[in-house]
Amino acid sequence: MSEVEASERVRESEGQSPSDKLARRQLRVSDNGAGIDPAIVAGGRDAHFGLRAMKERAERIDARLTIDSAAQAGTTVTLVVPGRVASSSGATSPRPSRLST
Image 1 (cartoon, rainbow, N blue to C red):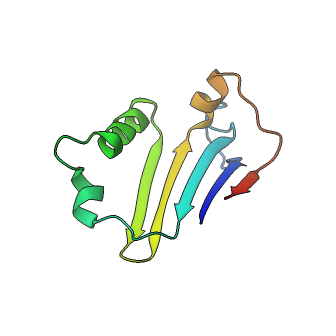
Image 2 (cartoon, rainbow, N blue to C red):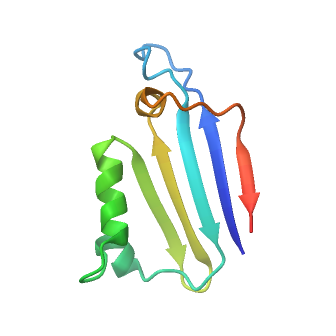
């Protein structure tokens, strides 16, 4: 079983620039599989670039990528994109959505 969730969050703190007040975009993908070895989450695997590339691409756009995993408990990958980046593409999302497979 896997689950994908996308949501918007609006920052309401005082003193933020207008672009920081824009809705952040969050994508969360979860499964209930075997999990990922913590060493692989931290540094990737030799000759494999998936996790490493995801982390590098998130950094390039000032996004936050987290990977939470535990043995036999599955994995959750969360990407939070700042509003100024998410809005620059012109993409909009009318409401949070959730997909399950």
